[in-house]
Image (cartoon, rainbow, N blue to C red; front, top):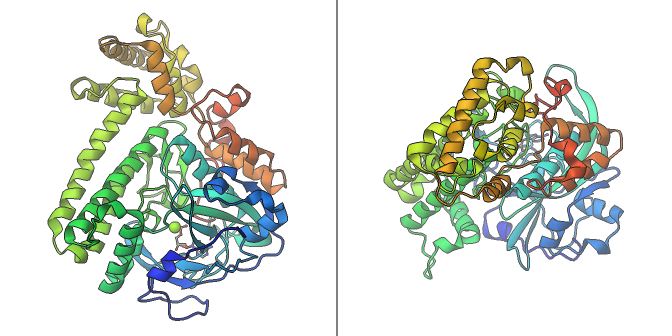
Length: 530
Ligand code: AMP
Ligand code: MG
């Protein structure tokens, strides 16, 4: 990073906090506050991402690990860095929460890369900022491992995401009450270095709008469009109502694509508050997320959301649409016309239905989505998967290997035996329903023009991952790392780079969640504590 030149676009184009002191407060008329990372006792680099470093043109090989750890925890700043925390608000679990902001994230600054555009480099867990409220601004190792691994897993699964450059221990202890039940203990402190073109959230526009600060709202929107949506501006660079409406339309489109990806791979974000919604349509803020093991649209890993299950797997499109409505309300003063915004919201639902169906057709290896025949196939499949505990990831990979010409297998449930969590649930009725569905599925494929089975298999395996970051796998890496053994962390980092490929040496990572993990903290239950 010593060789990186920070251009600091964000702070030079947007108004900043007039106070320089770092204490919790309401910050008005400002997009950010300067904040210096807290110095840490004994920084230690435990995971690094060469690919991201290369994208940043960061000649990391010139530095030894100690030097990298100093830089990547914020202990050592370079002359061109002007670290700052961003100011934003948000709706949390459906209620307006007012000012939130980067309470424990500090942006070191932004750089212009040779081939990957403009990137912001952020340290998460780097100490208090004016937005920390009553909290400490720190992060613990378990949540930092989860963020580091998951953002990279997402990237290699082909899902838009913020990325992670590094993971460091700070050498400091951090007190956390993991399940908010009076059992606080000290955990190891850690810092993840995250990278994205922009960390702007829906809440970045909501806060100035809620405060009737039209000037700041406009400045934020114009900066965002100029930097990350420049194709929406013509040569005159005029910010007309049409430009703002097109911008909102693109945010809706990107958000729609993002949710379709999450549904494809079985990912549950867990905390889709509007401050956790990236304006770029990237997956951001990896907290109590999870992958569905057994297919269950009602599942959420987040214990904080256990009652209402607002952010359950099957509700993600609906909740993102709700979040987009909040963004529409926030930017309305820029357009002064609800019609174009409403139209985008209406289109979101149709687009989602269409893209979800196309995605399902791909998962099943169809050449294209044919509404007349396929809707029934999809809904019957979802019913079947949910009717007994069936591992979603394994099921689709197994489905690719069935012999289509045999049509219904003689004992279909045997073919899928590895996918079931409770064999006693496999009743004669279930077997009959599975056979019926498989018959319909094979029929659909065999009547498809120019059907080619090996092409079907290749297509299915390119969209149905073999390896996903099941919560219990992260937890095993966390348990070892907390004892100073980072081998599992590095193994997961390596294998998740090729989630769609057969990796025979890693076969054991492509199995259903073991029974001991069914109700274990960190495996099936996670809180927002991090
Ligand atoms: P999250 O649910 O992680 O998106 O956090 C919601 C808000 O709480 C954000 O504004 C965070 O910056 C803030 N926050 C979460 N944890 C901490 C912490 N340990 N210290 C300071 N702020 C925090
Ligand atoms: Mg957040």
